[in-house]
Image (cartoon, rainbow, N blue to C red; front, side, top):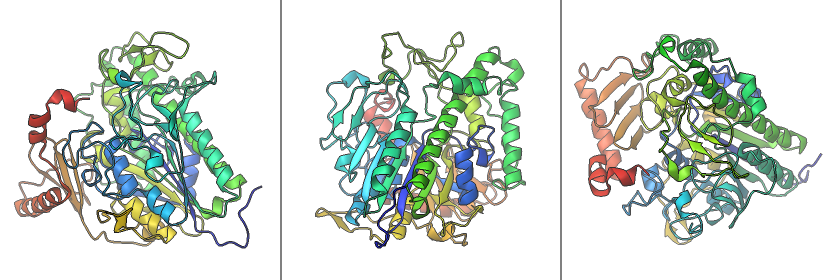
Length: 538
């Protein structure tokens, strides 16, 4: 067993784990039937947050996670295409500092295993001409990480991921058996084994792509879940809600939102076996990720640093309702597998998902299950799009088995880590001014103490807008009107009180408008007019 030097005081190591496109109700300790014993053990040994929020979509959430700022302030107000507009460049700008940069200045070693997706656009059509490392395509090693193994862009095959890089060089896959989730876990284990004997604390960011589409999983994992979803989405969704209530994650007075109007009743679905298979593969992706997290936790334990390490887990947005057409998302679909077989893209009921030759998503009705008991999905800022599990464990600091019920936001992660590490947030970094931190430290919440958030939480993505202030939430689904909800009594957003409390709407709209102007939000109508829907759909 390796240990650090006994005579050297050591600040806590930090392991930050992020899932990709995973809903609030998709792990066992938040109500799911999917087997996640390792995440469940984190919940039992640490704290769970019932009202943790992300930024509704992958790269905006990752920008906020890494910088403690809102996405527009960090340069990723939309996605990773460069709009050549302030706040919408598609890569981390020079007026933000990452967790890795700040912690490295404070003496930490810093590493990333997995997905980056905050450094420009990496479509397959430009393979061979990717500009990794230039001003508009910063790599993790350009933004504070000592090492990185993973993908530079967003979605991609789990068996043949594109834009796979190690530090400063793109790498080819050489082993016969390659599954990206396992390789992320393996690299994270190697980092822990190396750093455990160091005199320096370490920060390890583990950014899985699971369970993001495509539905790719190993046959033995899929078989474990085949048939489990034959009872249909209504039954599974209701069961998850009931389990959540039993755990105390959800207040029993909050009614489950109705099945989404675009999801048919299960008995009306013609391809029920295929639907069962789609959800089985999705579950298998989460199951495999959890086992990788178990390997990471075991590496901490076997290397003698478990008690010195904060482990945090969360997701970047809610479940994803996107239906992959035969001609959709082609920029992510490599036409051939590693052994030269043709890949057929799209949700095709005649083909079972899972192998490398397919490229499917699980669709809106199952995403509605992932986000139980809430409404809507990734992309929107109703609760289904922005609610994430958050687990945190640091022996001796986090309150064992505690559920924290007050609102928190992904911008708080940076503030928490710096607070724990005793590292100041810089006003300048490498002679450039840095935007002041937006988040608040959650250390008191980790200890089980009640805390009242000092500032409202706000959102904007593609014109979808929201403000959360104390018990109230003001929210709008683009291009609709404002809706107002009392989150203490109706977190599932079923009773719109905007007409009853117009003065609260006006007050909170004023808060939103001031926030949007301060952080550089450009109205979505204006962006659509300037850039066009074809560009924005990339």
